[in-house]
Image (cartoon, one colour):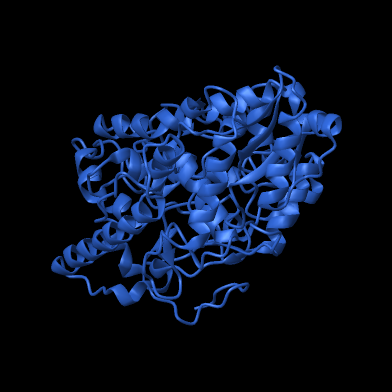
Length: 481
């Protein structure tokens, strides 16, 4: 994957356009006459399957061949790099040529996608539903009015800012896998003190503002921020200037200012940073749990040298993080000429054979984390999955408590520049008042939601800002409604 179908990432890429406006612009002439939600037209056309999961490429090529034989119908698989996948889907929708099955790189509200004609209902069999963990399908997230429109398959219990390190360099220098900010800084300093011009302490995907935003969101949450993406769970208010955000960004600033990032890091997108790290001469890299899968597709021989100590907390505090209900991973296009066969392809993803192979790819962790114990994965990957089961709790979500909130989500106009842009500017010396710029974000995001609520209510909804408030939220516990 290597980007967890981030809604925030897509909105940033979309620029200052509302979700509703974007979808309308991408709707083209609507679904083709040959398609629909039900029977299809009996076409012999191949089932087209697109995704953006880099670590699953080999598996999915093989699975397409396997399912072609099992279904008695051709299945054509296409991988799109995450940075290009959203645009590819937009262009396909404009031409009424969406693939039959595609991954959720858009990350937009389910209701908006359904209303704009992107999705068909997926008529899963009872057996397929039963193969997934209880509670996998959630109204407002993967279902609307009890109908399934999105298939969850990847774990909601994870964090994305894993501290990965080169164990070869670790052995040479002698540092412990860091668990706090000072520990990381000490390890980086020890690498720099080697004085070896061919070895560098660290790299980041600093050229990818979305990735930097997501990683600092994680660092801030595990550093004590009582919410996510700048928004507090308890009050629903935005608090980007919270100390946890400032501290996380200052950590990156210190690393940068000490000259511990390999030259060129400020321009690196994720594939650049990951492949540069996997070349073997860099100590540390922040990446998601999917890093081994991504690295294996780039430099397979480096995978055994990958070590991790999980996510940092400022002073080694116990880790506590939060994620929402399982997001949809797979969709079926409304204009699929063969929805029955497309559904069978989707149901094949619930089989033990597929799930074990998917887990062995070491990309995104599976929805049922227990599968990892049975799969052929590395010890660092097992360590992360075990950590997720212990430290990641279910977050409260306005759209789960009140699905009507999705009407407002569909009206969001992205804030730009966002957190990732501020991080880039601060490290480059172009932002001088970090806390002040973060405080300005609060008002911009508050206005974004206020405007979205006002528009939704003008269209007949009954939503208020109180829908984002969870005063009964308790840290360190799964939220229950």
